[in-house]
Image (cartoon, rainbow, N blue to C red; front, side):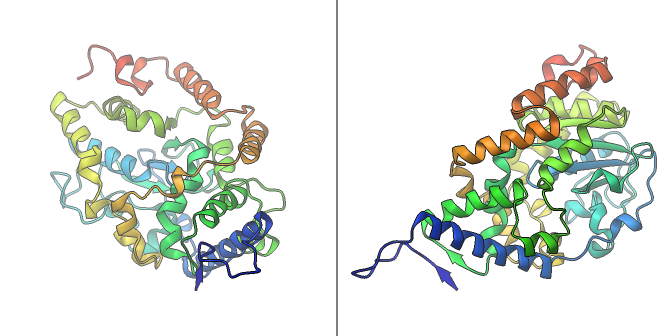
Length: 352
C-alpha cells in the first residue's frame, strides 16, 4: 500500500486539503497502532519479577537513553566487582537485554535476570508496577518535544502498513503522532485497544508525573540532555547511587564503553532480541542508522501550546526546562552530598 500525494495531480483535480491530509495521517496511524496491538506481546514480566533491595532498574519513556543507561549501569557493576560469572570483562554478551533484562517482557525474552551484582533491569512501565521500598530506580526523562520525532524515526517506516514518501503527509504524520501518542488524543477504537481512560494524558506525562511527583531516596532522576552531554558526571552519579566507588581506570573504561562510537552500530545495542520478540523486522538497521527525518520536522505552534498546557496540568510547570531545573534542585536537597549532582563539575576532588 502506498500513500504518496507527491505524484502529479491530474488536470481538473486539486491536491488534498489540509483537513484531507490530517484525515489520511490519522487513518495511517490508526493502522499503525492496530498493528502494534496485534503483533506486540503482552507484558507478563511484572507478575514474575521479585525485587531485591539492591536491584537497579532503569526507568524511561521510550527514546530517552534507555540502552545507554542500561549499558552504563552494567559497566559500573562490572568495573566495581559485580560482573556476572559468564562476563568477567563486561564485553562477552550478545545483547544488552541479556545482562540488563527488560522487566516488562522477561518471560517473552527468555531472560528474567542476570547474576550481576547488583542485578540490573530496564522498564518503560508505570510506577504502579513497582515498590519504591524494595529496589532502586534510575528514572531518566527527555524533553517531550523530542519524543514523537525520535520514536517515529525508529519504528514508523519499518512497521507502517502504508508506505509514505510525500513530505507534506510525513509532516502531518508527525503532528498526528504528537496529538495521539504524546497528548493521548486517540480515536475511540484505538483508545479502547490500548486500555486508556477517556481524557487520560499520553504515557509520557503519566510516567513523569508518577515517577517524579514525590522525592524518594530510592529514585535517582536523570535527564537525557544532561546524560549525553556529560557521560563522566553521569557515571560518577550512578555509581554513588549504587553505593559503588569507581577507580580512575574503571571510570575511564565505563565512559569509553558508553561513548556513541562504541555503541552506535554495535549489534549488542541494536535491539536484536527486541526485533525478534516484537516482530519488528528492520529495527536493528533503524537503530544503527540513527534516522532523524521525522525529528527534523517542527511541531506546530498550537500543539506546542497543548504540550505546555498538559505539562502544567500534570507537573505544575509549563516548560520542560523549568521542570528539569526544579527536579535537579529538589534532588540536591534530597542528596545533599555533591556525589548525586550528575555533572562532572559538581563532583568532589576525591572523585577519580
